[in-house]
Length: 322
Image (cartoon, rainbow, N blue to C red; front, side, top):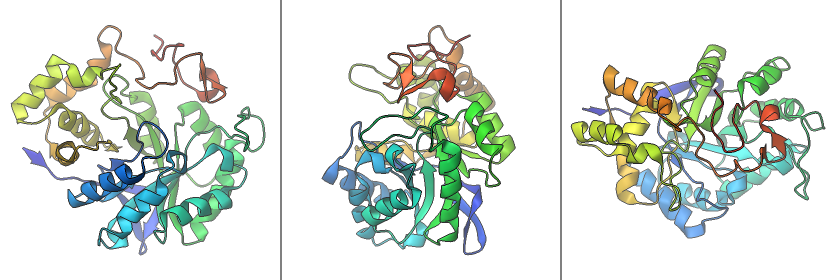
């Protein structure tokens, strides 16, 4: 059964006086390394033709100009699109400058959702500051709240924030983040963090929803027989199953693909029954499966912070501690 692509309501954004809504499936524009040029532009064009209305990029992806060019050339009215971008580490001490740099590169009139990409700040030379060094993420967030009054930014949120750091943030602000974009897939279902965000009115967007597969590291969920069986039953691909699982949990997802066929499949949702949802919910309980699938789990530090400072319960290889 084909499911519609639902919209999720955000808490701190408005559109024409009404609550701002985000499409549950978007196209991710991280290409595995900064840049992408014409490839990113073509990816976004293909996605928009396939029916996507949610685009996710970041200043740190170094491709905002190409994303904006694709949007402007699509012929789709700006108000029909939902555009997310993110504040880079080096701009934590100059939020207005960081925001304007993204808006200028995108050239899209306004930004729907502007995220604090990571809690860490860094100097222009690339040196990461510690959590108690200014600008802290609380100080940066306070500056981000001022963007809501400019008319150029409809909603603000965070990314890569744990319960620990959300607790710190929420204790020091009256503006609850509209969203928290985090790594979520069957190896890392993030049930506790998602539940916490739901209780606080923070929408969760899943990045790397397919597990960020690579040539040297296949994504376990994409190659699991039990998930493949679910896909076969629905006449679908495994990627559709993984994205549908997230949407049925109330999360939005921003998968990236440059393959036109995959792009179309990823936005074609299916309806999973309770047994199928349980199979996906329990996938992380398999031996050696409860883990992150990203590249930065090497020495116990992620962009200058320890896992403890980030509030992440990982060992040095990215496995979730029991």
